[in-house]
Image (cartoon, rainbow, N blue to C red; front, side, top):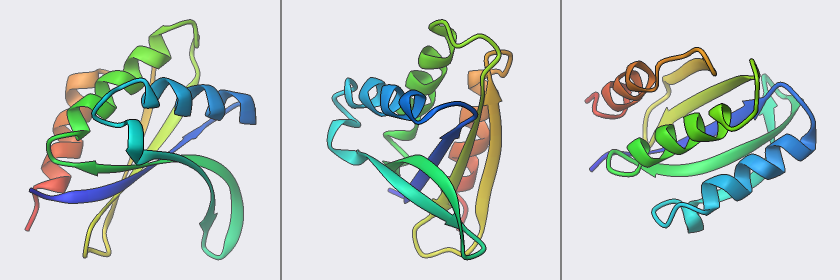
Length: 116
């Protein structure tokens, strides 16, 4: 089973991130794997993110729950999902929004996690 770390950022307030973290923690499979963290991009602080430890098994729950949160009155809110596979230097960067297709995003994320 492949593992990784997902960092989710939201174009909006810190309150949106807290709401998303709480939403994701309501999933039994994710509950103890979700935290809020300040993230850094190229050495510069780039705001806060919801960080989730994922595996090839739990990533489906993460994607479905994330899109459920987007559909729940978030309008056209943009969310960025960055995924880093354990032991790898590559990252997957996916823009998500209410108009994005959860199955397409999930297939990309699973494909990335399952790479050798």
